Figure 1 (cartoon, helix red, strand yellow):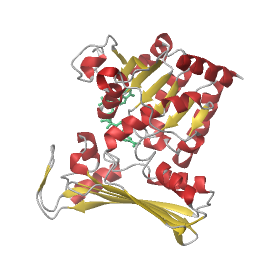
Figure 2 (figure 1 turned 60 degrees about the vertical axis):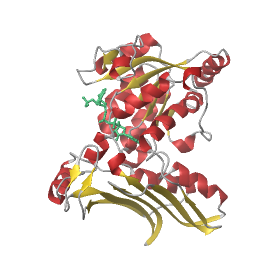
Figure 3 (figure 1 turned 30 degrees about the vertical axis):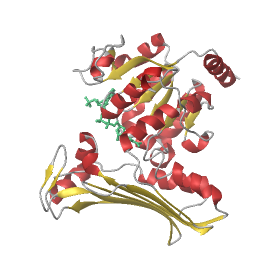
Length: 356
Ligand SMILES: NC(=O)c1ccc[n+]([C@@H]2O[C@H](COP(=O)([O-])OP(=O)(O)OC[C@H]3O[C@@H](n4cnc5c(N)ncnc54)[C@H](OP(=O)(O)O)[C@@H]3O)[C@@H](O)[C@H]2O)c1
């Protein structure tokens, strides 16, 4: 009943062409890109932004995201988020601060308490029951009680390793085994990406930093494998994940690093889901400076399916996914959602005239 009321309010807003009020939580490279893209949309209004970095707090958002003009919204301290979300009447928070659910849990609580829906780029929130079942249940309970929807989303996890192959199995009567490969040029990505993939480190430094959690590589192999299995109704016996450094044989240069021969130029990682001793799902990432970019989905079954792309640009795609999900999440039931819990999402086009 309450949820129905919320959907009615949202639909009347859309019918009356009132913009959806959006807040952005975290203005790093991804949050900045999201904020810029929100400002290009006709039916989205940026009403608040939150940061922890003191150098950004108090700035006009337009200055903080370097668009060359002020927009009249100030970057607020994240500790004030709950109060400012309520005052600004934000319908939805687009959240991009960090990856692990235990770390972002207090930030989610603030949004839930303020009654705002939340779409986050946190990799572990894409399928939170996999790594954090207790926290997931707690967030689901809180979200339902406060009549809001919470969802993790992005290009990967959130699309390439899970939503995309899940949709591709729609044409299969039988799936015997499913493999996804993503190959990308780590040298073209943002600085925080190149750092977390250990570019230019020695193998010893790489292993030490991975063990201590200082760098992470890709997060979400297990989340994606588990999400595919649950969509297909397959009971996996176990899921294994791993990441190994790729060592460069030659000198490589990126915008941020010079990688000497013998140093780390990227990561080869995987997540594998087994049924008994049989490999049923494999997601594999090769992210290295200078690599060819492509995604490949290979399904063995009836009929077999093979699909290959020329590479999806990760940062832009992440901003697009988060923004395109806004109407779906606002319409969805309350609680903690995965991409498989909503109706088929897609792009929606309503750029401001100046951007179209
Ligand atoms: N699912 C996907 O496909 C996908 C794709 C891209 C990125 N991601 C994930 O999305 C997140 C954001 O990416 P990024 O590259 O922009 O990360 P980033 O470079 O670490 O930037 C995060 C920003 O959030 C700020 N921040 C940290 N804690 C905060 C808090 N409690 N409240 C408010 N702001 C806070 C940081 O400030 P400080 O710099 O002061 O810490 C920084 O400005 C990362 O976890 C990344 O792994 C996921």
